[in-house]
Length: 181
Length: 172
Image 1 (cartoon, rainbow over the protein chains, first blue to last red):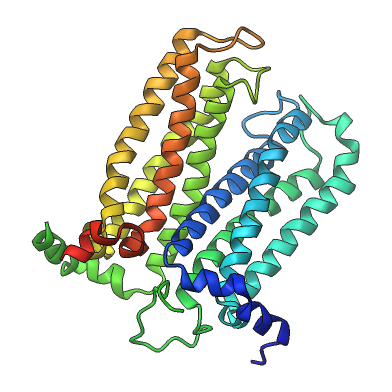
Image 2: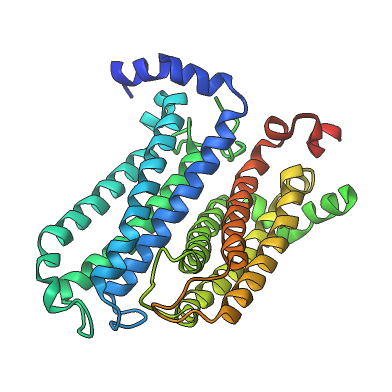
């Protein structure tokens, strides 16, 4: 597959060089990425479950959602920065990796799902904020969101096992390629 | 310990985990999902103690909402973790991060129990007075401890890079 000039430029950049050259940076950045993912997934799960009526609808949806939003977004920003650093270190192998590409697609879908919910379904929130079941569109958004974020995490973990091989893994190959540069 | 790891690595169960290629990625992904569930459950309980979320609910309500998720998540994490260790016992047992993680894990669970009891006895109700300084400090310490546990889990794959000469795999 052709690697565009942009990906090659990222790979040749100083930050990419630093990531590859500093042995200690990679585990720290990967660990921070996992911490950020944990907060993003966990806080979104609380909001999604509330949309699905779990544990109940007694608490205001807006309150549940608003108080978690800053945590979700801050953690998401950290995940994007650490993820970009990991990408920069091995840009060309990420670029051709199918798991990575599908992960970006799943992330995009999760974003579209959230945007549709915010711009359409959430406009009527005053009518179902508490003690009333969420309308079907809201429940679908919640279920889709859980499904998409679980997919993002599975695909993200899958990158570490396929990076550099793009699925054409030889039968006897060592699968965990975290040391691969 | 090395002999035990080598014996474990040669058992049929370990060989199955090693050779069926989807098992380890699947278990690691479920393990990460559970980190999200457990860490955020602990975070919510801690943030309630610090007065940052759910001040409209009593501590008892917040505990009842998140503790079952936390404990169930810890059980699933332990189960997936045990199978992952069975799949790669030599790598895990010769990792300094792994052993420190195990110690911190026990400490982390103990911390949750201790600080939640402290919070219970303070008896904060919805909109009531804040928690004692001790309960607040315990909440912060518990969250930091669980962040350290997450870091060490990821660091198992980079033992020499992280620990240098203190790495057990460098010594062997």
